[in-house]
Length: 214
Image 1: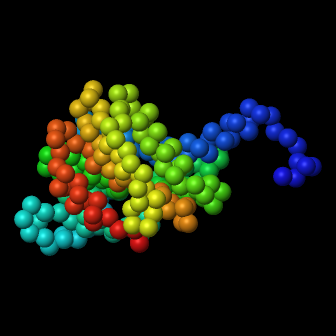
Image 2 (image 1 turned 180 degrees about the vertical axis):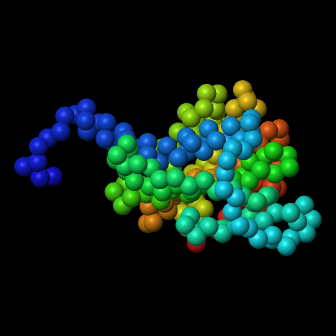
Image 3 (image 1 turned 90 degrees about the horizontal axis):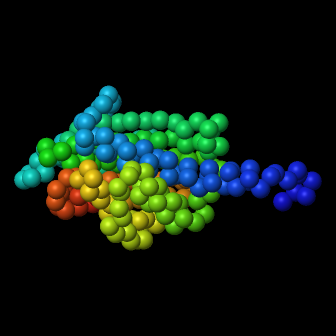
């Protein structure tokens, strides 16, 4: 550190540190809040994206494949997905990132989501396990009544990841999925399956297995 630089007050340094720690968590907050609103109230105004039928037979005959160029992934969804995109203002968070979210709802009302965040070079992702833990903590804290059922640090392809299951008995929703860190590109992905009742492990598996980072 340059000894000639003026020292900042401890409170200001602590504030900046906390801001950077929660930046990745902000997206997770929006996602969980969005899932709850979708489950209770249905969709608001969204842009629906182009897709391709996967040509499968049986229970997945109506599922479709979608590839996102800006978010750099492909996955299959049970219905035509919608897209939401946003850009966080660095004046408010001191960190700049682009955010994309793709959502589809099946006939049973279960929600399938892929989220992608592209962060500025200044974001520290040298220890992706910390970014993943921050994201998981934010999901738990984002909505009153959220409870962590299980989590496991793992890998998704070549990337460090966390698999999780959350539940909220107050609104009767279970949320399961993956957080995936891609530090070399300053990116984070979230796969999320939210459902009421028992849900479908087969559908969740089909969704997760189809996800590919490009």
